[in-house]
Image 1 (spheres, rainbow, N blue to C red):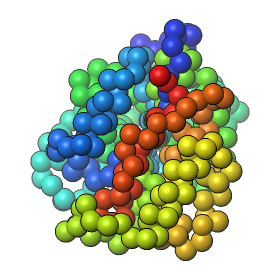
Image 2 (tube, rainbow, N blue to C red):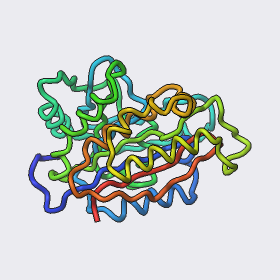
Image 3 (cartoon, rainbow, N blue to C red):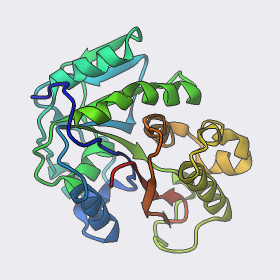
Image 4 (cartoon, rainbow, N blue to C red):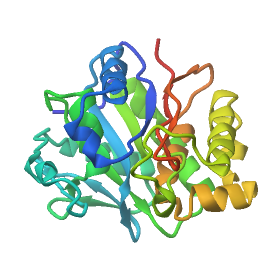
Length: 268
């Protein structure tokens, strides 16, 4: 059970570049790095994840005791549909999120959603025992970037209550430009430029550049033709606190147009 009490150590916030869900079936440098990131942390009391794959009208938070594992993808690998990530939920944390975001209406989802692959395909590598309670916060598809950043700011107190805030998406996400036959080949020039711009904005703590990412023009349009995979980074950036340092344990692009860059903000 999650109880909103001060924890002895402030938790960092993490953005995972989650890439293809097939990573859940792999063991490689990326998945090992996710595990190493988790092992470097104090044990979270719970995890609050903002995934690129839960878009809603309005805002909702999962509030069931046992969230289901959602297989929200096409037939890319049959074995993916066999994976279960049976982490418990945290209804008390869901209500705490609801309180922190008030007066914004936040629906408590008791049955409709669960843990989508933006969440479990990363957590199954980072926290393979599935013994840390997990709650997902949806993204209101109608809201602008600055609203998402402000929402992250309102969630920041959770860091002092033992909650690990996670965003799961991709700094570059253009599926139509992907080269499945060239996983580790040279990225497109626009993908590299945009990825570098976003990384530098995070490292240098210039949130205005993250919010105004569309000002990168054609690079932004190609790197984020649909911004749902970018938006989770704004929630994470909003939860940043003064003095937080940034680590970038993963910083590369796969398949020429899928950014795997991951950030840990704060912590040791």
